[in-house]
Image 1 (tube, rainbow, N blue to C red):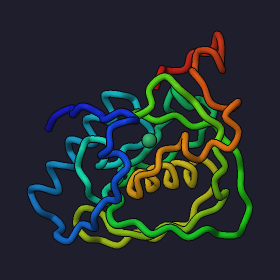
Image 2: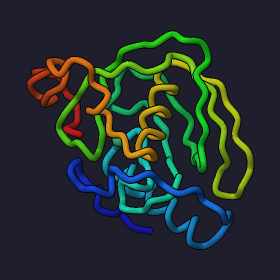
Image 3: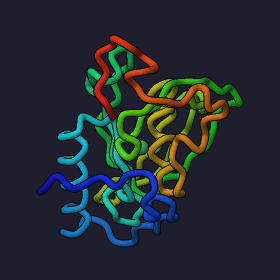
Length: 177
Ligand code: NI
């Protein structure tokens, strides 16, 4: 178990499409997920995708237990999601501010589907099938974007809504990534 360096925007590995995981409940997969969890918790992130630590596999983790970075956000159960598939539920979109451990110190306003069904498996190969909304849906869409080489600034429609956290939200106690 170890906290791994998080790649930052500009590193080409963040732009690659991740491969499907084919073997479950292996020492290698458990070690990867342990490192991801250590890294996410050390940096107080809401989620982390394997490509962010340089591993090009379709693995994301996320979870929010009243995170001070998102003081108004609902709680999201800690989840390991492998080989995810997303499906929008309805067409309603919602704008919200996002940050990313690969884009430290910045925030951007991004439109996401408000309701989402996601499917996949956990690290043991057990199926996951959930329909969620709001912040939970946003976090999943953000993390799964990483598996397709998409970083949230690519989805900011109006670049006036992208900038340094300290300048966008002066005086607010928001961690810098
Ligand atoms: Ni991110």
